[in-house]
Image (cartoon, helix red, strand yellow):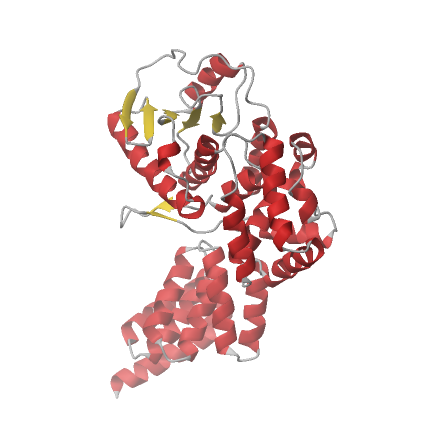
Length: 406
């Protein structure tokens, strides 16, 4: 994750200066490209027509998610949004060198005065999550600039990060939004170091200032967007929608930026907003904070609070085994042995300590009188860590033998 975040910062640094030097984006490139289109997009892919068609479906789904928030009138689109997809990074690099004289580490949106020349350029990645995050980010930039060529920087980048975990659900075929909170820990660290911009200053930042302070500007922009959308105070939820409705496609960057800022602070005192933003950040818990709290509540036998914290931690990081293991312990304590079995099994799949988890599975199976399964898991625990489990797992196996005889 840290490598990807660093790469994103590098791409961001380049992205502020992509407008002037490029040649025509229809320049010929080696290899054949198949195309597919919808009312909104045209996709060119050198991986074939099926790949191009699949990308169109995905992009249309992303567009719908974006426009749930922005509510742009699609009649304002002056042409198709163009996307060019390469089967590998080499083709992507060669193409960009022809277009802008250099390459990029990640996907890039090339914006020009006309939508016909503008183009999102992407490539296949081995890591599907990385591909989807990059696509959701840069496709949003393309979407926003198609309607508002010069949006405020904090809105452009804040929302681009906000949407990064939006994914196509293979089970339903729908594109589903999940807020990306990868920067929460970073923002809270910056806050503790007193490095965050005042919100009023962030809203007025120039391109050069943003580049100079990218390590703060980028994560804080996401945090401010998250605050406006998720604040329990509905006045903040409302003002961000009303502010975005005031973006104008004919305005300069400076005009759009000042219009949004002035509108927000017309309704909210800057110092009060700043205080509420800081309070919002304090209320947001990182994965590590949730796990620490969950362990403490579990130790205090407050199962309800422990379950709430571990459930929230699981949503923040579904690939970490710790929440599943503790949720298994909680389900076992509540007598829900089937649920406990599911949580323990999932934690084992995600890399939990095998002897510990097998022992928990064995005890859980014994409690629900699944003696054959209990024996299997207890023997696995003993084999994995004889010093720790041979005695107590052996005692339970002896009980199983005794119960079976009776």
